[in-house]
Length: 164
Image 1 (spheres, rainbow, N blue to C red):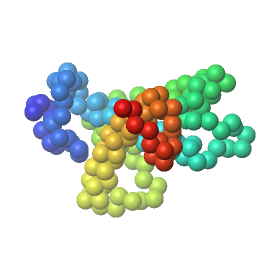
Image 2: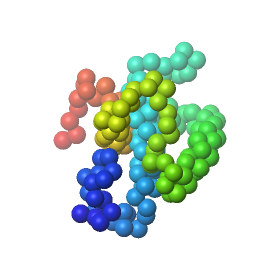
Image 3: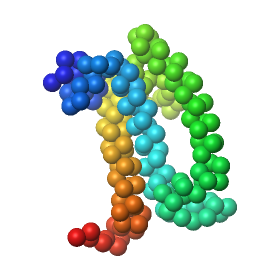
Image 4: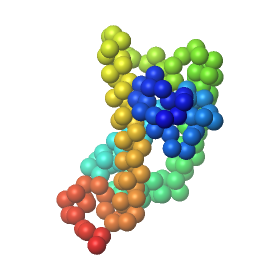
């Protein structure tokens, strides 16, 4: 087990086969994991919802094809702009994390006041990191499954075609 992964962080199971925790600050790695995981959770939700609902002013197409379509229609530059905007705030937050002023990924955003005590907060943090890791794997699986089968997630569930 890596030296810096001692189980003190939520969701730490000591998994670091490439030894990144020996090279980089563990808090920086956790910040990146949470950020990518949160975007992956949104991506999975968008991927699935897009199969069932499309705004009336947009053409109906598979999520992977929609990505390519909207990038060619100027959507790519909008995405880059808004991600750059988000990154401005996350750079400030990253420096605060490195300096020890805040925990990795904690933006003190709880408008519904769900984490009323430390036990509940710890449970939500554990759930978030597990869901984030699952979503990062899931979105990659959704995209590759579409490339191989040319079917969306629910199309393949309803009309399974074996590759063998």
